[in-house]
Structures are given as C-alpha cells and as structure tokens.
Length: 219
Image (cartoon, rainbow, N blue to C red; front, side, top):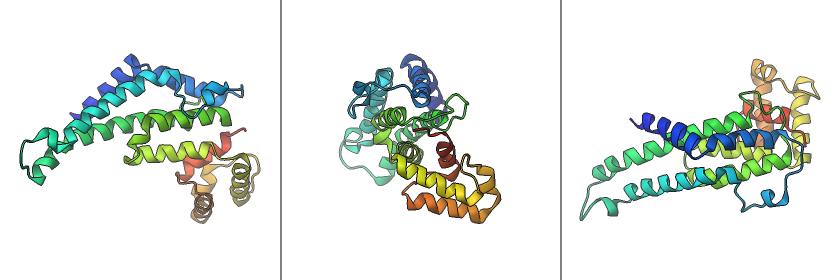
C-alpha cells in the first residue's frame, strides 16, 4: 500500500497537478544550455518558479508525516516503544518511498538517462543543485536523497579541480577526451584507483555517476 501511495502521489499529485514534470523538462534545458542564466535565478535563496507548487505540496506532506511521528500528538498518557514504532512505520515508509521516486526522476536528468541532457554547463548546474537542495534538503536522512545531493555537489565543482580530476582518471585509461566507464569496470584495479581519486577530491558518488558527469561538463 505504501508503494501504491508513493506512485500515485508522485505521478499524479506532483508530476501532473503540481507541475513537477514541467520542472524536469526545464532542468534538462538549464543544464544543457550554454546560454547565460539571469542573476535573479542564480540567487541562492531563489527557487525556480516551476518548482514552487511541488515544494508546497511536499511541505504539506512532510507536516502530516511529522504530526504522526510525534507521539505526543498520537497518544494521551503513557505509550510503549512498540506502539510508537508501529505508529511511525507508515509515515516513515511513505516518506522514503516518495523521496526515492523523486530522486530517480532527478537523477534521470542529472545523468542523462533519457539522452536529452548531453551537456552540463556550470550556471545551469548551480541552479539545479540549489533547487534540489531547497526541495529535498530536509530529506537528507534518506540514503537516496543524500546520494543525489552528492551528485549535484559534484556537478558544480570548480572548473580547475574538475579538469584536474578528468585528466587524472583519463590518464588511467590513456584518454584525454572521453572516459569510458567500461574500461574502468573491466579492470578492478583501475576502477579502484579511479574511485580513490574521487574520494581524494571529496567526491562521494558512484564511479559510474561521476564518469557520466565528467564526460558532459562543459564549463
């Protein structure tokens, strides 16, 4: 039932009614376009307008989950740990499943799963990272969200560090223009070395995700 709720909530309430689908299309354009992004949109406290309704609905959803998770609002008097555990199961499960579905859709954009975001430009990536953090930052206790935020942080790495990392990993496989993840997966030692290079730069996302971003970042 929790899976069914999450599917309906994300696909109908958020994607259609709250226009999250519109934001995903815009995000792909922002990331892939070299055009200058306006200063207003670049503000750290600004939320892209197309995401406003989604953020509002998620806030209401979080408030409802919080009201159930707070035992003082659920029980009058003493209550057992088992009662509190049972009461928290549904809101925690629904919250995690909703977050997982949102992360999957945002990662599709970030990693170009649908082949509509071939390039990543820094200004658009900065806007995307900010939007994701504003919308899902409070969900960071959920592993999938934490992984997504690590990906968006890497997308906005400063140019010199980014180029240095590309060159270092490229040196492992003898390429200075394209990093082939298959080459790294085929040799466990090379894969481990590449992963260690990422960790040394405080990049905490899977090697495949990092390679996708390294190949597509343009500025």
